[in-house]
Amino acid sequence: MTGEQIRLKRLFSSGNVVIVAVDHGLYNGPLPGLIDLPRVVQSVADADAILMSPGMPAHCADVFAKRGAPSLIVRLNWGTQYATQWHYGTAHSIPMISARDALALGADIALAGFSLRTGDERMDADNIAVLAAHIAEKRAAGIPLVGEFYPAGAEDLAPEKLQEQVAVGCRIAAELGADMIKTFYTGKDFDKIVAATPVPVFGLGARKMPREIDALRLAANEVRAGARGVVFGRNVVQAREPKRFLDALKEVVKAGRDPEDVAKKFGIE
Image (cartoon, rainbow, N blue to C red; front, side):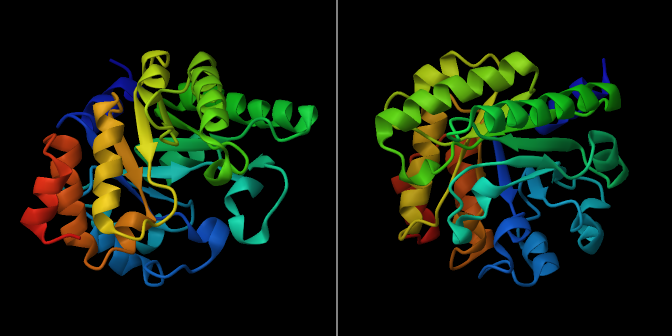
């Protein structure tokens, strides 16, 4: 068994996976709910994994340096598509660190994001080249990699356009050799994307929803469509009580409980 396989089995050892993303500062600066990152990470330490930027694990080492700690996922590249506050018109990715660098930081898993249909063929090809290089590096390092497909302007695309782009992007990432895929939930046909993607797919949470119960419903829809878990950021860390919401989210994703019942149990509206 390779290092990649060992780390993958460890991640999925309890079934579906709940990952909390706290890497928003890399693109958006200190957002509400993410000001004191060590405190935030401590509050979500019961997640299966936590996604972080390369410079931040050193400030949160206590969470990961104990038996039963969540898996540490470290992001490898930076892209303009995530800096939404600046309204960039394209989505250009560049490498930050290598998979081997991520291992040295204590990562169990690496993540690399990419976008296509930027409006510039050369930029699309460059984005694929960055992802392909990270996949080659992760094979050599023995660390699994999540390929994050994030269409340019994804949160504002029409449903049929989002479905089309996510279907193609997920398959491309799998064809290149990503071990898992993180991407947007596309609605009623998301199951078709999961069926056509031969590696585990995680649904992301995207924008903070006005009501916390809606985030639970989103997670339920994603796993019912075949996703092997979720990657939620703002919907967890900006919840009224992040730990309580995380506990509720785990019941929906890992135990398959109805989100309405879970919301009642935890007093979530």
